[in-house]
Image (tube, rainbow, N blue to C red):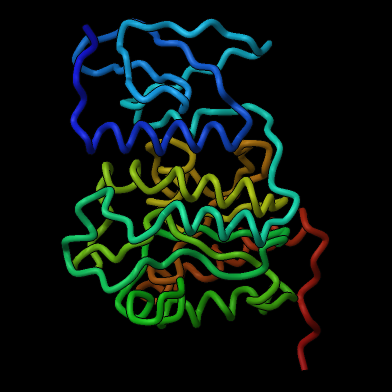
Length: 275
C-alpha cells in the first residue's frame, strides 16, 4: 500500500510535475535512495503518488525528477519547447504562482508577490536575490536605491530598463531584508526557471552571490564566480555584484563594469557616447 503524503508535500510534487510537463517532459523514473527522502513522481493524470511505482521511459532522453532534490530543476538540461507567445507564457506562470503560500515567507510580513518586469522577449535578463521594502510596496523588482543603480548600469550598456527582463530568486520579501534561506530559494526557483524558459534570453546576469549560487549550484566566492561564462540551460550566464553591494562598496563599481562589458560584447552592445 502506498505511503500517504502530507498535503503540502503533495502540492509541492504536483507543482514540480506541472513544471516539467510544461517543459515537454512527461515520463519519470525513481532512483532508489533513502526511503525517507524519495517519493516517486507519477504523471499528473494520476490522483495518487505511489512510491513503489516505476514509469517506463518512452522518450529517448531519460530525465530523473525527484521532489526531494534541492537542485533537480537547476540540473535539468533537457531541450524543450517554449510558449510561442511569451506574454501569455508569463501570465500562465503568474497564475500558477497565485497568492503563493508554498514557503514560510508568506507568513513573515510580505505585502505582495514581486513577480518580474520588463520585455518578455528580452535578449538580456537580470536575476537578483529578492524584493526589498520598496519592491514589496510597489510589487516590482529593483525600484529602490539598488534599482536606481541597476537602471544606471543598464543605461551605461546602451539600452533601457524596458529592454531587459528583471526577476529575483525569491518573489517575497524576506523579513528585515535578510538573505533568503535555502529552502525558500528551492521552493521559489522553479517559477524563475519557467520565466527564463519563456523569456528565452540570450544572456542572463546573476546579480550577487545568492542568485549566482542558486542558479549555478556552485558554492564559491564572488571573486571566483565573476569573469566567466556559464552554460545555463542553453543560455549564457555571467555573474556580477548586486547593486545593493555596490552601494555599500562603490569601489567595486569598476569591477562590475568589467562584467557588464563582457555582456555587452556578447550581445553586440555599445556604450552611448559621452556628452
